[in-house]
Length: 293
Image (tube, rainbow, N blue to C red):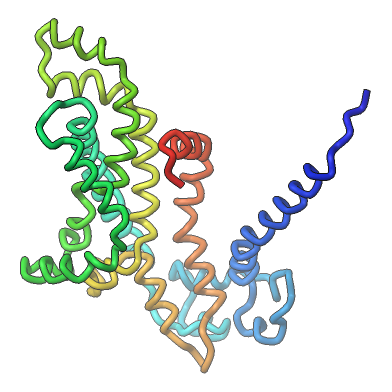
């Protein structure tokens, strides 16, 4: 017998489809612009397909086009050291992720498995920090980094986010609380201390949420713009997100190089898109487990 689809379900699917289109359309528009000829874009502003399809924008971004070719295609002709910015972003995102996940795991273990006076109150204080907008801590952090003489250095960009965040501690603590305490007690009977239990028992059993936290931290660090812009203005430490802003400011012939900017944005976002597609199920499952949206 054929099952009838209810009106409510049909409306839900239609709304979901509309929401999906609205969400994905900016990404499609970025692709359409990146593969278009920048000189022809102003004449076809409403075209849904690439205008005079070309890979010129990608060649300009990757430094494969000469100055004459770039200017002929609507580019500025200025050199963009894409690979240096990509290297800087990899360094910042990787070091930040490794440090933040490691220190947050230790803090989460202390909040979840150790008993010490005032533990719950201190944890509540950490949770309260989730309510503080990041902009409130930006200025004190900037003054501290400046006084330490770490402006325009990788250390200055990485340090504020290297140790731990309230979200990371809460995320891991939720999982650590679910670990069977009898396993921990059995290890103590065998003579294991908390350090051994943490590295030999808790960390291996928590590989999935730790990997998920690492992916989320890496994506956030990769996409961060404001803090690297404040403390890393010199080219040798400039990350890719900041470099895209500089690329946008290079205005050739009275109009921005939109095709080049979208091509650079697509290349910059590509590693994160691949990372998310590879671990999408794990990320959504763990976010649902932690209750964080």
